[in-house]
Length: 405
Image (cartoon, rainbow, N blue to C red; front, side, top):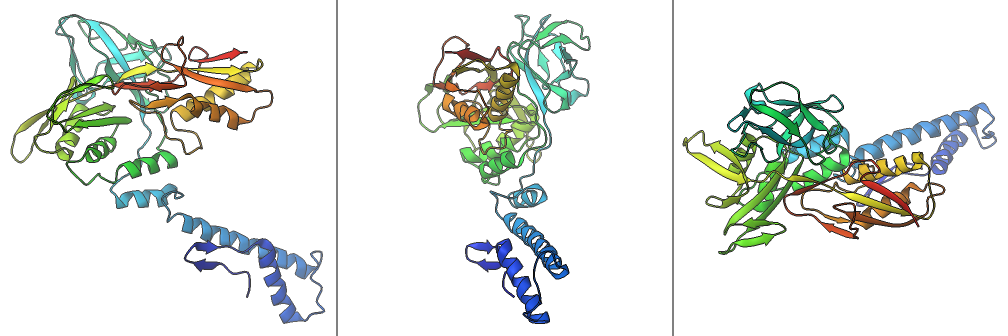
C-alpha cells in the first residue's frame, strides 16, 4: 500500500494526507470495484476520511518518538534519558536568591541553612529568605553581600532593597538589606535550559580541565550560574575583567549552592596543586586521607541592568508590560526561543533585546532602537560585565525605560 512512512539515512519521511487518502481509496477500489463512489459524502468516503485521519495521527506519534532520539528536539522523559547518558539530571525548581548586607555587633554569628536553624529575613512581599552559609559579622559591623535563599521555589521577586527585615531575631543582628536585585528563582528546568547545560556538562566525568570544573559546579543543587577562568602562566594576572588571578590558578564565581558542595566539586574536578582565587572559602575533607583542603571562590555581586526602549510613538501601559515580560523572559532564558540566559561576566548586546521586541509583532509598536546600561544614565550597544558580576533585570519601568523620539 502506498502512503507508508519511509525510513532512510536522512531519517523519517511522512507522506502527505492526500497521499494517504489516495492509498486508502485504492484499497477500497480494489476490494469493491472501480464503480464504487469515493465521494466524501458517501459512507465509504467518510470511512476513508476517518482512516486517513487515524493514519496521520499514528504517523505523527512515530515522528514525535523518533525526534526524541535527537538531543536538540527531545523533551520530557526522553530528554531526561539522554541526559542520564552523561549522568546529568534535570534540575528541579530553584529558589530566588538575594545577596544581602547584614549589620550588627561584631562577632555575631548568623547560621547557615546546613545548621538547621539559619538566620532568616523577610521581603516586602512576605517571602522568607534563609542565610545560605554561616557568617560572622566582622569588626566593621557590616558584612559583605552574602546570599539568602527563599524558602519557596519559583519566581519570587528579589528587587533591590526588598529583602529588608529580620524575620527571626538573632541577638546582635540589627538589620538586613539587599542593595541590588537578586537572582530570580525558576520553575523546573526547561527543555532549552537542560539541553544547554547538557552540552556544557560533557566534561562532568573528567578532571583537570576548566570545563570539568564548570560542569561539576553547574551540576550542584542550588547552583544557578557559574563563571570559570584559568591562569596557566607563571605570572599574576592583575586585571582580568575586574578580578586578579594568581599564577597557575583557576577562578570560579558561583551563584547559589553551599560552600561544602562547592568545595567538594572543586576538589573532584581541578588539577592537583592548582591554586584558587576569590574572597569566599570552601572547605573539603578527603574521607580517605583525612586531609582538609581550603579553596577560594567568588560569590558574584548582583548588578542591575537597565534597558532603554526607544519607540516612535507612545504605547499603552499594557503594551509596555507585554514588552517588559518578554524582555525578562529572554534575559533569564525562560522564553520559547533558543536564547540562553544572560550569565555571570556576560557580554550583553542591546541587539538581543531589539530582536525580542520586534518578534512580538505588536500593532502600534514602532521600535527605533534599544540601548543597555549599568546605571540608567549612560547608554551603550554593548555591556561587558566583570567576572564577578551577576547581571539582573527587573520588569519595571525603573529598569526598563521607555522613551519616545
